[in-house]
Length: 107
Length: 107
DNA sequence: CATATTGCTACGATTATTGTAGCGACGGAG
DNA sequence: CTCCGTCGCTACAATAATCGTAGCAATATG
Image 1 (spheres, rainbow over the protein chains, first blue to last red):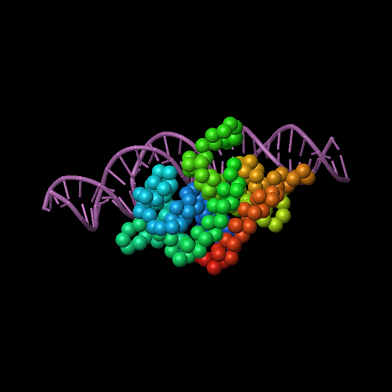
Image 2: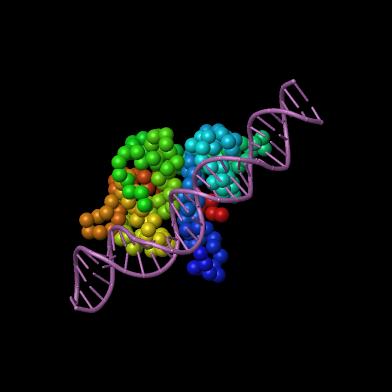
């Protein structure tokens, strides 16, 4: 895919540089929101997280965890196990209301 | 493209039936959050939306619009143009705080 | 008629994700 | 020490999602 040849490909789906676009793009990748959700209460080991995430493949989970770590939302505790950072907890606070909304929404 | 049909949509990434999982999965598809964001103020035609979404391919935009319509978040106005439903506006209200968060987050 | 817009689709090429298997490192038990 | 289990993490081929381009039918305007 060298259509936009010459341009440094920054953030997928967002070449505008606007932070909101980068954030929406990051959270719009598979399992990203789910990971934040599953870590909302307590840290989980990589395998516990995998179990919580419906046995999603470790490949993409590791990819998301790396991205979320680079973004500063998730960290790997020194005793093992992934947990939310302070910033990650703030972000998670914005995802939490979706729970009640989803219950009302059903489908 | 998977048009819905019968009952078991076998929601990707969520076989639990918990609404929050289905919602997180739906919003975790490419351009889904972005579409909600771009429609936050006023309805847009399909092409205006495409322009707003960084010229994303119409294939996936149509797919997301169809899904978001089936979910009851987006509707196609009788004069043309896509807009948020009442439910969609409520959902969008939960996405809006991400803007200020993203500005603080930068990267 | 020509022209431009609407929502929407086909289809090959490219990416992302899946599923399974396994690695090296660390720690506890025997 | 060796054996065993778990940790975070990776390789790899197969599958599904997405991209990019082109174009359709329908509608409206002149």
